[in-house]
Image (cartoon, rainbow, N blue to C red; front, side, top):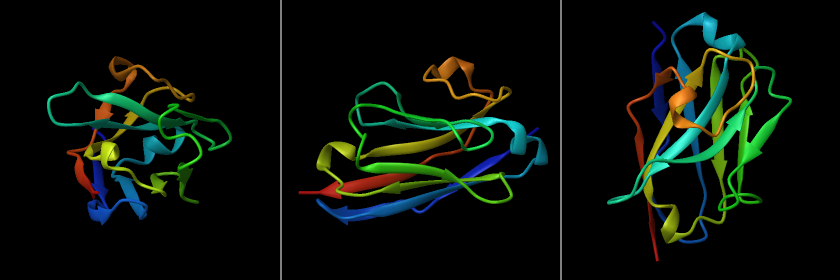
Length: 124
């Protein structure tokens, strides 16, 4: 079973940037769509962005559009999330997810594999 490991979280001031990484242990992830979700304290987990297996199709939540960029590494088993112009409301645990399908989904239940999450804290 594929395992996903996130890294790159941390504490940053508002307006700053962070880059999250997610590495999948299973080569089958190379043909899987992937996504990032986040969960703020006291809130439900929400969709942030998804990317197709090839990297050619992406979809962003309105709250991060224009500030966040998702990409896949050349080996396709790694996905990155570049986060710019961070706001305090971006504070959350960020989760990487993969699904047994080639195209992204904004629905949490359509993802089959999840990472353990990485904390992102944006101070005002």
